[in-house]
Length: 260
Length: 234
Image (cartoon, rainbow over all chains, first blue to last red):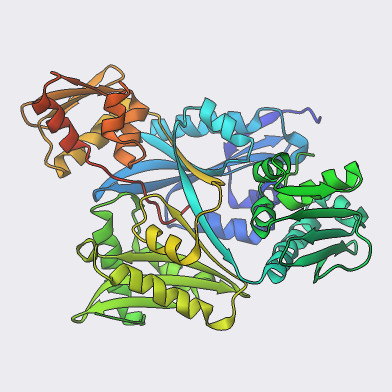
């Protein structure tokens, strides 16, 4: 784990490239130009906080000062977004340190509360609870998948794009040659990788090394959700067979769980 | 009432519908002119856009998006006075019909509990997936929260309450009929429509003094049932 001098400060547009790199590690494809555009937006006041370790942007927390309406009465809130840390700097408490600074700034502005959106499967949820985020309400995701194989292809198109942009994921993309068969009672799809990106084709193609079977619903719910994937495996709603190392990597690719 | 494609000249009406809905909701974000300008320019907003028009006035709208076959219901909102009419279900049905014209790969909608469109979307798209995303809130400044709460109580014409939170006290202006005590996060949860007053009272997380039927009724009037609904995640 790299050690170094840590500095916490508000970001400027000059930090955009470093911030985009952190976002790629945490959220997916992101560019310096996109970060610059967002920083220049005047839609709401904000403080984008960064932690620099030896000059490298290692972690970010974005405070967006927004207004929520309760019966039409404006309540200012310190909306937290963009909580992200580069892989190599994780586990050092940088995000917690930035969050504490964010809460201090929100309080200093005379704002009564702080709010955020996050995912149940994300480890950061534990940090938020420790910091006092006790009020929670779930988002309902309603999804009706009409054409399963093109839907899976779309998901993997995105994975290909993202994984090319980040070092650890790029390494998996380069070396991953495992053929995966997804099989539900209604459809089957074969997923292969050529070192640059994934290809999803309908039906069984060749001899798969990893096979994931289950109902359409259980397979779809496992996408991008480590908790759902693990729950479905535990309860037998999906069955994953193959060499253990290949199955572990497949779990990462499917659930986008990058902890390297 | 008729449902038709939205025109650029309807944008003011759409904004008025959103603002009318915020007056009876908990959580919707304040949207300024810059927000709306960005929203109309955003390529993700390019999809079917409908309005419900009644006697020349926009009473509801529905916005969808489509990206290479992946379609999404972005927002369906109608005026509170149209609750219980067919405006909501007709907007949802027509939006999904238009999204479905090009053999979509999928339909999706992401809604919070308090969205008036949720029951119609559930009926049309199907039951929700197991929860994956969550909205979280925490109080950071009890005194500021009391000020916020007092402004909300005044809007609700519940001036006869004294609030006590983490050692701080505030009144909404009138002679207090009841004192309502709780922790800051409980008050925040009640304001945002995450917590239910009666459940908190039963659970002992909200205390009302004196514990008379009249005082409890006064307190209940200050915290009527609301369910959180934020249409934009940030």
